[in-house]
Image (tube, rainbow over all chains, first blue to last red):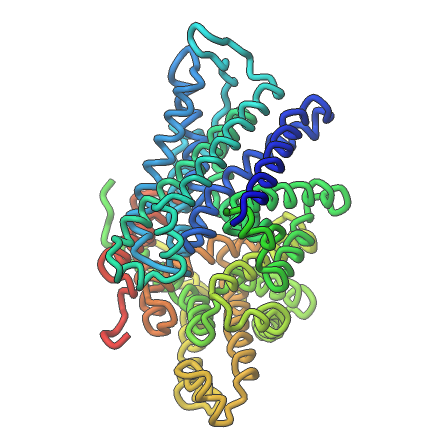
Length: 317
Length: 290
């Protein structure tokens, strides 16, 4: 680990962030909006990379955390007046944390595919509850609300225009990235990676593996909830479709396509996937998922490292 | 609202009927998992495509039984094709990659069905239209017949695995793939056959279950979740366990829907799953040796 690549890494990081800051000023409205969306889905995918890439647990239940974040935000914005952005964040994170705690407690008892299947089924529990509890969640129609003001008492009071929201989301995603990067490089993160490499040996050394896994799932769920809150803010609605397990599957797709264990990879995967969808849906209309599925399967077989897999070591230094 | 004994008995019959179909689908999935560590996420889609093959054959030939047979054969061939093209390259890799690949496959198949057949649900007519009186209801004979056919197919599978040459090869391959190969068993062919058998069973279940519901491109989604629950509760790769679990869970859901809507009754099976994971993580019916 020489010093030079590290400085190149930070220069690259700054250039990408600067480009993303400037993007909404240059891009047409549609593409600027898509970029914000990519960042939000990227955050969701990145949160799940903490489990898939670093702990070696493939979660098929991230839609639950994402959805609870959405509905938490909706609850705060609909029940408290005047609507408060920070309260929406707090409610969303609380909802996601509660769901993550519940899922983590049960599913971490299992490993590998069993973990994947149980997280999937747990996320469906939340889906069924949200879908059928029409009085509270609006059922199939979901909930709609107004975007709140971005206000810090005594400091700023801004309307969340698409551009403002983009910068806000960007700040959150970059912050989350740096935080997750710090987490994966911390002693805690090292234990997670050793669980991925050899769980039995990690346990033999004396680490309480289950506790580490529970914390990992909860952390991951918290960031997924954060993504949910911002998706709700961007679209001004919360809908049960986003709790359905297809969203979890797409999250895993972003990870695999982008390259697991890189944190930025999943964001790139989300960008690749969403742009592909945008491009293909012009030719295939609503059947774009057929070519997307073909590309995904081909990548699983021929390119298991993903788009950024070759940079993995460099990105994690 | 008081629940009468009659209602409970009717729900028992309903639960057993759905349970038998569920068992048929689940046994295919668990067979595939048991022998090659592949979690087939596209299994629900094979079920759905089976139902569509049934619809098409029924429209062309007019015979339900021919439709059942052709769906079984067509989906078995499709399964073999899927195995050879996408799953064989993944053999020996982490089982998780097979979930990913088959998830991709399920997206492809589901959207293919949407594209090919459109969003309007199709109907399969019941081949046997007679009814008999079950308390205050006219209960269709067909439901009883499906349960019997499903039971017969599961029994046939079990006999085949127990006594057929290929069945013995399959069991040998499950126990020790390398040793089986060394003994001259054509392992690659056995694996492809197992995948085809499992798929064919899913396809046949689709046709059998078709008359009870609407056939559309999303029908596989509900099923794959139920089947996963059954397979985990019964113990992954444990054939008998998943059959018992299928009937057990269907019965519970049938009883639960006496009090709540069927959409909410699903929660009962989730609860069973949670309890199983808490107390018997290897499956409710796992034997001590596993």
